[in-house]
Length: 303
Ligand code: GRG
Image (tube, rainbow, N blue to C red; front, side):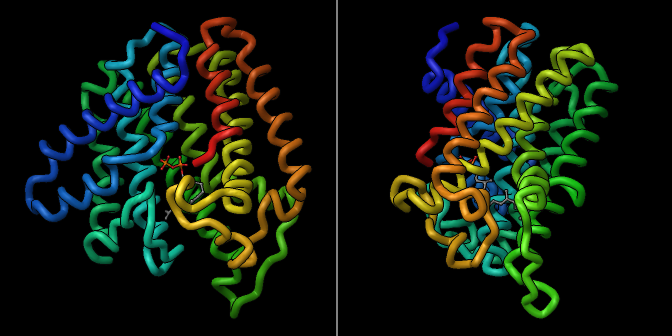
């Protein structure tokens, strides 16, 4: 094993893509168009950060990458479903994702909705399967954890709060969010799946309560860092590098960390969060080097 983060990310990304590819081939057989759209949504791009968190958190406890792949792939399926739905005209109305046409652009809206639905359910099919973990109690805990992270009190709830913040409901009224409101909204919208990545690794590794808590603190810090980095990219990034449209937050009048803290304040908060994430990993010593590097990568990412 090496400690070169880009190489480790690439290896996990390839392994997850191959796993998802095989799983779609085996379980989405009714409609070739649907299977193609599911592939379009999941394959050919993406940093695969969430699967990486599953694999690396599990590795802290000696779990091999191959053994963590099903849970990692399930989480990536939920993430890719959320991107396909988020890009729809009724949500963000985007043409570009991961440098490619969005699913509804490459296919059509109905197919994009169904491909997203199918990926969401596929995630739970994967988690429920014996390949995910031999212990049914661990599988049940993973199913419950992902359902909570993805649902109304997780990612979907956060997305709803985000749309409300843009003035989509109540006759265009914008609630005027403060920093704590933004932290809560983003904690649900993007933080919940990142937290689940670490939780899943801890469950596969039979972590103690203290180890679960350490990984939860790490993932909370990187969740906020991820969002601040996303806000900064929206202000400072180039669409060609970021792989999607930029400047959308300001255009939509969105309340963001950067809007509230300013560019310097946001950068400062980002460094503090990386330190917090590193400190949370202390109980794991040098075994957590890659996760520590991942925190910095998340904060400094260019796409
Ligand atoms: C539609 C139910 C539903 C939820 C949507 C995740 C989400 C909630 C929306 C995505 C919109 C967005 C751009 C959010 C900002 C943060 C984010 C999730 C960015 C994309 O994640 P990355 O950077 O993407 O990990 P890759 O392509 O690398 O997987």
